[in-house]
Image (cartoon, rainbow, N blue to C red; front, side, top):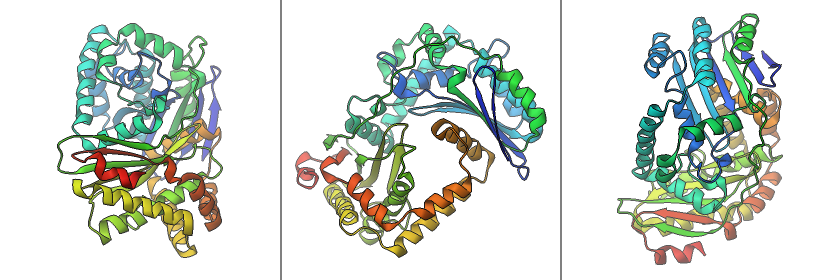
Length: 417
């Protein structure tokens, strides 16, 4: 059962009671991410996510860790390009102490100078981890290439220089600017008593106030075509191919999801079957959509032997051209829609995923979107819509290709242009 409450300070609370579960997840979603960072702030959103766990006015970092372990729960956070999220998941009987702990780190974190300096080293190690993971690294390089200087193309982690130069005063200023109740959604999903939960939420977040401040202006990104190769001595060549996608509230978003699913979203998809199963050219190949509030990208990833990189790019391009020229048959589309429905239902079988859906619905749509509505939208996708979307999105003249590994430009130039 869904309920929405707006506190006097403007903070929105959305809840979904699921009595069959024994767990409950509470999430705090702030509508700010890496795309909102200004010059010299690159990586600050993610760094702040770390700092909220490093001690409050009443708890040390060690006490925070011990308390959540004593509850047998999970306390964590993550940063995206548009949001920063803090959440706690516990058994329903522990919701009161869990909510107290979560609200304390969100409202009363100290950002002590010595903790800031220590955490810089932790985040620098996280950046180094990406440099050592070619699958992650090529996708970061690709975002930067495809979106050029747009903030959406920057690494969420930032770069070593900006992290090293961060100061506590920047963190405080950033929180005061962006962490405002009107830009915050608290989502609760799982087993709870709403009558008991409501006063707890009002006590935890009702006094959350920040002075008004202008928000950073967001503007849509675009995808730039071309070829970028980063030479690195690896056993495989890691490839990213990108095209424009759709915004999170686009009228054809379910059609775009279907295109992604049938092209590279599963083991029965065209790319998986063609590149891996029929030709044995890759162990890993998949596609995904990244949808933002005002734009989006469509990305294909593959890893193959360096000498086969050009062939894989050509096979991917061939499948894109085939979709644009021939479209999709009724039988393939029905299989894809059935897969999408099954994946959706299975993905929402726990309180954490239901909490995330609640918050995203509120942030992106401003309302609750029922499962029945989503299933109906998926069912409405048709072959004519997919053919039109293929023409709009899969334009190879806008294809951006990023390669990480021991591959020469000459080997790929002819298949990219």
